[in-house]
Structures are given as C-alpha cells and as structure tokens.
Image 1 (tube, rainbow, N blue to C red):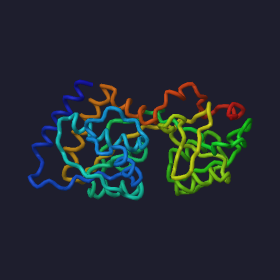
Image 2: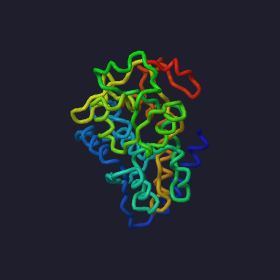
Image 3: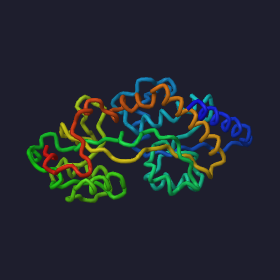
Length: 292
C-alpha cells in the first residue's frame, strides 16, 4: 500500500507539472436528485470539514460527492470543481467519453466502466464486492407478504440497472416488471400494484424510503447483495484528466486507510450494521428459505 501511494504521488507530481496555464473547466457530472440533496445536506457547510456524514439528506450519492472532494484535499491538491447535473447514467458516461466532464461524482459498477477503458480511468474501489446490500421495500402497512415465497411475488425494477436486474433474475425472481422511472416504481409499490422493490437501506431510524409523499419500509430479516465493486470514473479525454485521476487515487487510498470512506457509507445508512444478521439471499438458496 505504501509503495502504491508513493508511485501515485510521483505520477501526481508529474501530471501537475504538465498542466497547461489556461486550465479548462473541471466539470464533475452527477444525477440531478443527488445534486439537490447534496446542497441540502451541506446547508452552508464546507464539505472538506465534514466528518459526520449522517443527516436527513445523506445518501450514498451525496457522501460520494463529499468524499471525492475530500480525496483531492487528502492528496494536498487544490483543484476547483463544479458539479453539474445530467439526466442519466448514460449521459454521465457520454460526458466522460467526450471530455466535457473531468469526472463523475457518483460511483459506477466496475462492469459498466470496463468497456469504456479507452476513454475512462477507473479509481480504486469505493465499495468492495459484496458490500452493496439492499432491502425489500414494501408499503409500510403491507400484510400481503406474510408467510409467502418472495420469489413468486411481483417485483419492479429497470433493465437500465443491470446489476439489480441480473441479481434478481439469477436468484430466482421470476415475476419481475420493467419500469424506467424511479418515482413510478415507488408509486407502484405504494399503491399495491406491485408487491415490492429493492433499494439500498436508508439512513433514518427505521430505514424508511421516502420520496415526496410516498413512504416504503424494508421487510425485516431479509436482504440481497448485489455483486461487483463500485468505482469513481475520470475522463481520459479531459485536459486535466491525468492530474485529476492521480490526485483522486492517492486521496482515496489515504481516506480508506484511515477508515473515513467506510464511515461515510455507514453514516449515510448505505452500510447498515443493523442488518448484519439478516438472512442474505444467494444464488442456489432454497426458495423455502425466502419467506417474509
């Protein structure tokens, strides 16, 4: 680890010496809802000074935006960035490919980034394989699921979320409905049209998923792990890409060594100690074990 940090530090110095005098705009693309929650989460605070990452508007996406800036600072780099909202993950990748953005401020699955390796640099993992656990979210007053085989019930997701869709299908969930818009997914479960959806655990006391006036609750005692690791991505086509990548890699390694990255995800509710002992659905588990 020390040797890796020294090598990255050397690369960072070389990249810094090679920066042009007229630096381009350092745009970091993020989802619109993440940007809105990030601004509410900060509430005027300096992101570099945050050590308690909990709060009403905290989430995986929000703390990743904070950690990105703290990683640059941990690498002792001053590089002004500007978060810009884009509508989809595909649009974020396009901005990285054409160099209009220096980086994405939210993580991607490794499997999504590997095909883009000619245009995108991939950071050290921010979420390790097997860490990404999700709950089965239902209407808070739902009694439909009691004693039922979960795999036979109607679930909703979108094929755009490849890891979610693949994991559900390979673990035996057959009644899977495709719908792209997240608010519509939540509404379909709230209305009772769909039995449940999967979502990361939330940071509030009861891990409730809240979207506008809609509220869903996780079914206690059962969870699903999405496979793969998640990483931040930096553009190879942006003029500052090499410098930004070296600083980000060095800073993330330092944050991980001191445990700050994991603590941020715990504070945000993404990593939930409360569900540590819950039954975890895996490929090959008997369906008789999947009863709520």
